[in-house]
Length: 97
Image 1 (cartoon, rainbow, N blue to C red):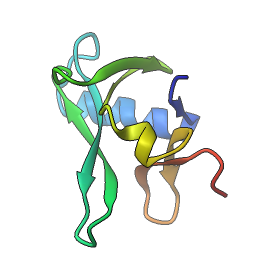
Image 2: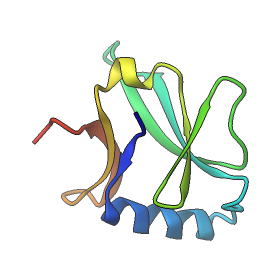
Image 3: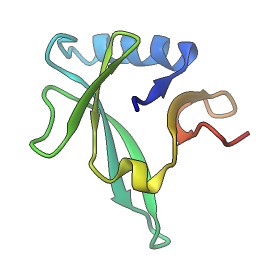
Image 4: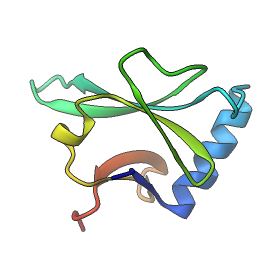
C-alpha cells in the first residue's frame, strides 16, 4: 500500500524541493526512521537527490518518496501531513486524529 500525502503537505514539499534545487525527476523526499533521544523511533522528513540503496521508491501526488524499510513497522498506515500548529511536514498514522 502506498503512503498517502495530503494536499497541503504536497504543496509544501513541492515548493521545498524546488527551493532546495532538487530535480523532481530524480530526487525526492526521504522518510527515514531514526532513534529518538528517548530511545524510541521517529520518522525524519528530509530531501534527497537520489534514493538510498535500501529505500523503496513510491510516488504520490507527483512527489517521489524514498521510504526507509522500517517505516511501516514504526508507523501503521503512514500519511504525510502538514502539522498546522507548527507549520511543518510530519508522518503519522492515518488512523490518528
